[in-house]
Image (tube, rainbow, N blue to C red):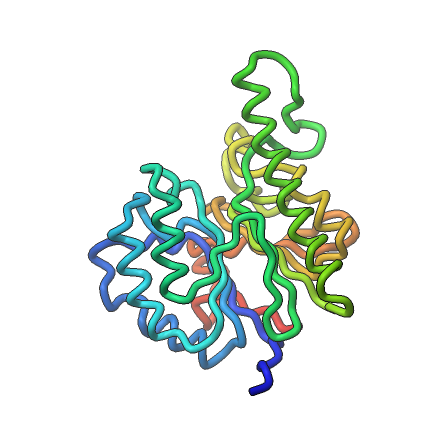
Amino acid sequence: MEEKQVKKIAAIADIHVKESDKGKWIDFFRQASETADALCICGDLTDTGDESEAEVLAEELKACTIPVLGVLGNHDHEKGRHKLIRSILQKAGMHVLDGEAIVIGGVGFAGVKGFGGGFDRHMLSMFGEGANKAYVQEAVDEALHLDRALARIDQDHEGIEHKIVLLHYSPIQATVEGEPEVIYPFLGSSRLAEPLARRNVRAAFHGHAHAGKLEGEAPNGVKVYNVSTPVLNRSGFELPFYLLEL
């Protein structure tokens, strides 16, 4: 059977599924399936990083009839059980990307969690104590993993018109504005924006900045959307997710 082309992408982040959420997300997944051709969930899939929360989400995902892709967030790493969480969700059919890429319905998707470090002229540099260098290196590594994933799409799938990036941390400052400036370095890093422009990405989704703004642009005019659930709720959409039409 020919694979259905992806023309509409639903996106959301920071769903923070709890053990008590059984049945809460079924209608959401059904509505996403009726509206879009693929669903992206950009981190903080669980509330406290517990595998029991991932099991609840895995059960709720049975109501979804379209491909589901996602990345993990800082909450999913909280208890050091992120590998187990990823395994549970992958067994449920979700594509959890961590430096990987996949092509679905003619669209290339690449994803990493990302990391902090700040933006533009205020970005942390690789200088000083080892702990500071390690913090910066984490953001550098995440950007490199994203670039390699996007490069694999270009190498293995010639003619892909649209590439979509999933992140948890923001690649630009514009979509975290509204948060206290003092925490910008913990909300994302401009290093994550470099692969977006270099690899001609169509759009990038992220979450994490609950008080941020919905939309901004990375270099080369790449659209960036903060699809954190609180941001979407404040934006007044009729749908409980952001819908991108390609």
